[in-house]
Image 1 (cartoon, protein in one colour):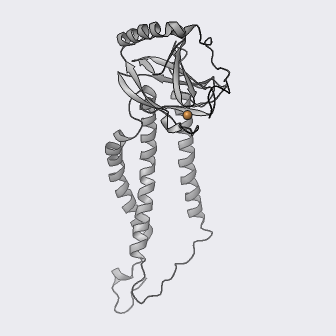
Image 2: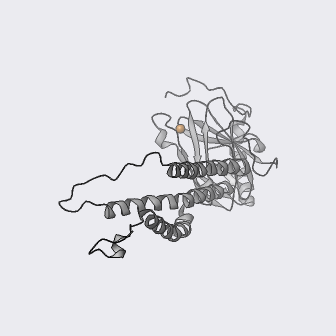
Length: 289
Ligand SMILES: [Cu+2]
């Protein structure tokens, strides 16, 4: 194309906006993605309080890393459009020509979004089958971490407005505090005596609905000794906000000591307790909601 009189050849050359946006996007993505992974990655919840929590952190890191370039594209596109196509003073604000029936753009859009969505669906399914830990699948979750390895069974009983914990391997002992041995595979059998509650042991990466009449199993492999927080995560009545407590992961010797002393304290009431079962019949008159 020949330049008109008085216009330099360089000025007449059409500006390739798409190329500029793509280059800026690639540069920003290459810088931002590792920064997000390095600085934000370790701070992503729920931390490393258990094997399951660590796996959740990994999944969240992968998804954050995938999202970063998408966010960069939006930022670059908006910044470019807002500055480059800004109407000058006195200039009428006009839209550009509409983009219709552009097969290349359509194909690219469908391919890119389809790839991202199906890729994340595949990743999520793989992670669920590989490292899933139950918590929402009732008595037989599709994946059992550690295979069929023997696990310490602990029952979580929710009621208005507290959690209690039964240990069938300790003679059906019931405790008001969840105490778990370190480095142990645990099967938590979550149930409720009244309303729908949700057992949420944040640092352990466990959240499981507590429904009356349902034995909802969630697995957790503890790490070293630590304190963790337990909350009810389902609005369950007037004192829902009061349903919180600290749980403890302790080393094996401390766990044995705790178990022995709790069993001694529990002995006088043991005969009044219902036999250990995966669900219990609630007593409607026991508490007023
Ligand atoms: Cu509750």
